[in-house]
Image (cartoon, rainbow, N blue to C red; front, side):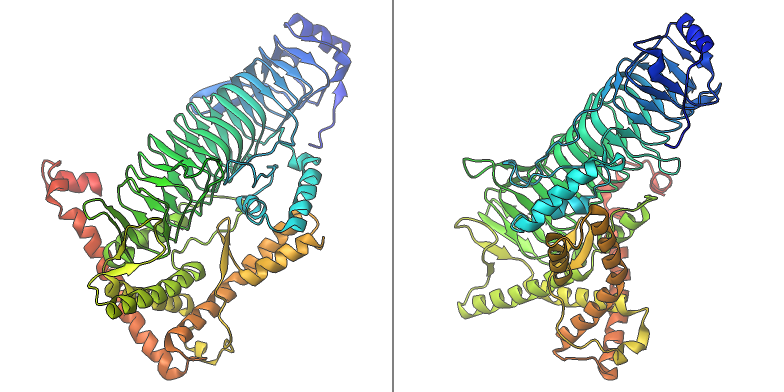
Length: 598
């Protein structure tokens, strides 16, 4: 704040005293002009207090309209912005409050030491990080994930202490146009907010040692301790959150989440959902009754759960640590008895208790739920209302990371099918997907193998479509980038990540701001990298080093066929709902159903 402050005049001090205000030392209370004395009533000021412009204006939040000024509050060592309404704040200490803020009915709001560690992904503290204002989910993951890079770990810790010692990195700041009301206790929590992207905290129980991103909403009984929220995160309805990072555009409600890193576009808003010591890479949904990571298989709390993009455990799914899931795994309702390592993306996983086996159907989404698959790609981008977008996110479910998972899955299906054929088995059995002696049965392996090929062609041709026939003359021969790392939602080629780590370790990137600039640069290069990868995926399918005109025309014809398949399957999968007699049984007639569902 660049506001010019002055001391109070003797007349102002006299009037403030008559209006029930007291101060340890009136000379430590500084004000900006214009300053309407009549708007300051029944307060106590301790330490150094700076007050911005105060006029006879109104600060509104919905139906609540409060007059500018301060009343019924106790302020210690605070800086208050201009045109704020602060009423019935029983204790406000150490905070810098932005302009046009509304603070109402708060028991306690205090700043503390910024240097607080949180323990995401693992309950034993081995991945601990220190949140700061301005940290993204990608920053948190970079720090928590690559623990073997000791030099980088030391540099990140050093840079974080530097950041926390700046006003921008402090956790004792409330941004412009924030609304905080009817809340019990807030301690050492930064709230980022602006006129274009305001944040609000309402009827929360306790918030401590956290960072709240732009456009966030925390409402109705939330308890959160040691946390980092991205932009446009919603926490509500008695959520309990601790030691966790929650990515942009996510919603958590009525559940318990601890020691986790969650990438953008995560939904977990049903009762009795439990997520602990987990990495969930976003675009995900946890249904009611989920207990993910609740069962430890060792005597110490050092296990983890890792799930790729699009993770979707169904109703009442129970999973054990340690488990890992490829992208877009859908888990049928079950209590899964052992640790899992599902390596087939877009798969349906089922615990068949009657046959005492694990069943996995590859490419399930593509074959049987195309409407949902297509909708998921579109809806996350459409719902992204962020203004600032500090974290870059790949929302398309077919991208370099999932394409590489599909290529690996095709190789595995080929291997397991040949093995079953050699051994004369009618079932195709997989290896390494579940701990224990039960068999893992692959359902519809042939259909899934062919579906995976169509998915690769669809991804590649959709990516290359803007380039058109010029693809055949591009110099994109060479080795395909097979390893892509998801850093908070942004896909980065492994070599680029290694260079990033090296540059941090050596001090070439000497601040978090410099790291963010590198992320921005990599994002600018990503469309070209993605197009090159798509081209090389076609080369992989053709077993050639380059694509000629004949091959390109053949892929264009296949792409047209696949596009028609996608369009048809979207309609068919949607019709399964529309023509479901049990679903229609709740409506009086077709007109009522159409009116409700339109």
